[in-house]
Length: 122
Length: 149
Image 1: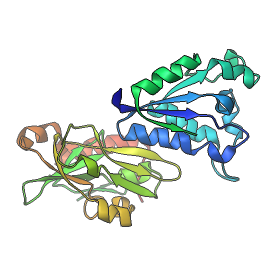
Image 2: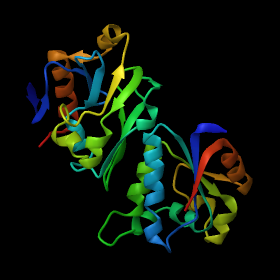
Image 3: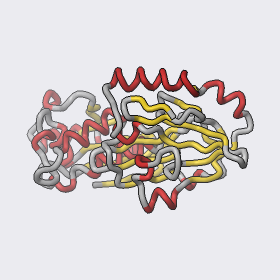
Image 4: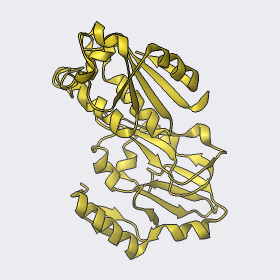
């Protein structure tokens, strides 16, 4: 376990927009606190990783789209992992994913969890 | 006090331009640090929270490491230390009550933290002050098209 490493498991997606900004904000915040941050996307969370989708999801009407928060997290250095099996659940293929996402099996989630000192799930 | 693109830069501070941080020697001998005026613009102009790393008081912190976080509805980012030393105090109470002190009074009531820095004389050589600092900041502000106010 690495004291300075945290894991955020993202299961919320396009059907629950209000739940889709804060996890990315918390991830960026953790980087600003010198933590190493992994985000693991599965279940509905994977839907946000489809090219062009996060730009159309608004946590609040008239506010910023999820893509603003997602891109901030990527730019700050958060590592994105996508669960392979969740692609099928969301009718997606690997080619649908935005750049910078590592496609991994579910066992990687457990490895990331072993490495992390803290785990959040949204 | 120099003013560049409406951003103020006191003459007597030592600046880490890359990290947008300043440092100065207090009467106690401690080194007080904070952020420079352009941070107000870079962070979007209005902060919802400033959270100094109070739990790190008593610990050695290297230059470049996070000593506080800034949050607004559109921005999140660190305050990175311009010095290496032992963190001895943070301005958490004032900044908790009014996070925007960091923007409205960055060199005064909006200070962030204080350090014990035994080798300050050596470390200050790595920081800029006076005209050298102003020149570096002028270059940054013009190249990034950033201004204050």
